[in-house]
Image (tube, helix red, strand yellow):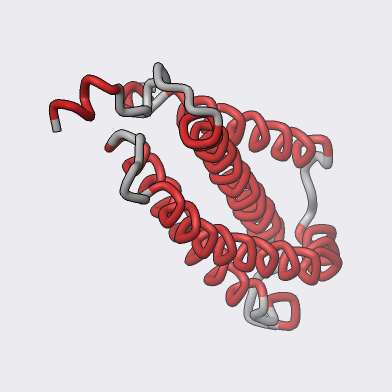
Length: 182
């Protein structure tokens, strides 16, 4: 994947972790087999409350992560900061992805609250398509949140190594030579 070349190794690992989770979740979907329209309608009715809870949880988690990123920036932007620009770009990537997840989860929550199964205007054969779309949306949102959490974990570990443990030869740490030059 060419777009992965421009990302840090931490971000690439997080994306691979999310991709693994997505494949795992979608593999479970394939085990269900093909559904008829009526079966899909019944499954949608049974799973809508769970999908709403999932979207609501992802919205809350995303908002919490954004708030925690502000704390992280406060910690990492002290006067004696030893963090390179790449650290802040990584935090920016986390914030951007988390914001997208927040928005998509909130919109999905709103869509999943529509009374789809009550409508008489939707043909029966469409319910299987709607069911698979809801599964795909929930799988993608869950996997994307996993990517954000893995990226955040990498960032926290790097800050612990640089700020807490004082490791100066870390790729995201400003070396003594770089400090003296600036």
